[in-house]
Image (cartoon, rainbow, N blue to C red; front, side, top):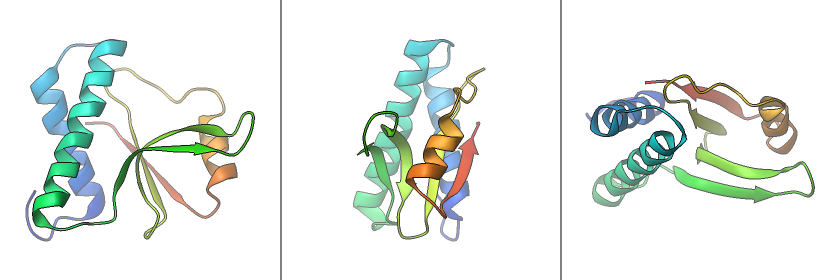
Amino acid sequence: AKTGMSEVQFVTRAAQKAEAAIGGTGRFAGIAKHTYANNLLSRYQSIYGNRGLQFNNYFNNGVGNRGFLDVVNHGSKTIYDFKFGSATWRSGQLLKYQRNFPGYNIQIIRP
């Protein structure tokens, strides 16, 4: 990642690199791309300094209010949700995020 890159550009670039490295379609390719992008972002933060990004962040606020956030920055109150290939929002996903993380900005990252 380049110096001066915004957070959304940084996360998007990692997703683009994951798409290029893994390719393919379907659930297993999507899981591999999520893992690749998160590992890349984590490695970057360990080398160049923590930007406050957390990966595969699990939340559990009771039935219907649990899940994993692909990437989240609680400092900037931003959730980044990777959508590789033809993946779409599952029913209620946006509402669940809004209910559990009020005031957070939700960014769809589609490389």
